[in-house]
Image (cartoon, rainbow, N blue to C red; front, side):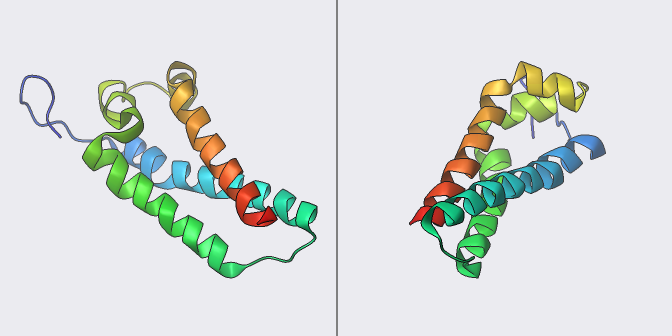
Length: 114
């Protein structure tokens, strides 16, 4: 990635871990919670294809769309404000993290009920 001055900037190891491991795990857990609630509402049982599809979608979002297309303020969260702790990042960029949560929970509810 390049900053405003054209100088190359790399993600720190901590930010790579947060962006490519913790965030996808968080989204998958939020999906599974919503999915379980949706299944209870519809009185159905788990469908492995729905879970696998969501996991693939999360990985595509977090590994391809975020860093390449700067989706959900990826550059601002992990490069410009890379020195902030996870808690501080969540406070400063709460709209992005709320979006990730809502996408996961709504997709889980939708997949569980329908």
